[in-house]
Image 1 (cartoon, rainbow, N blue to C red):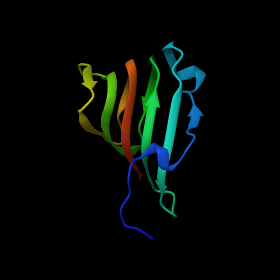
Image 2: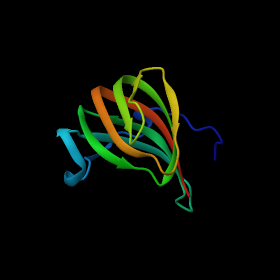
Image 3: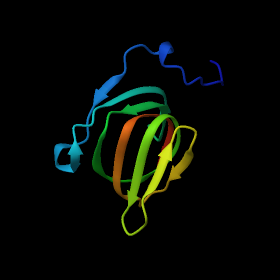
Image 4: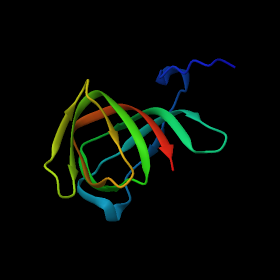
Length: 117
């Protein structure tokens, strides 16, 4: 087993296709593609690549998530805070308790590492 994890979608093939729950969608018809590269045996950590088409939906984080945008533009609207515009090259962490709206302005692709609490 290698201790190196490469984020290369060609290593996995076809992504999982999903969408936000209909009751969470605010605008558009966002569709997600996910290439999950790692899931720890206890199911508490995930790592991979995620992509979304334009749209906006409500989010409610109960986990930690590190993100690094590879392409696109998104705006995070945290409840009670000014919106934050993110673009390719930006990296950030969403902490447990983050609530608001994820808005994809231009198709966005990100690297992610999620740690459940």
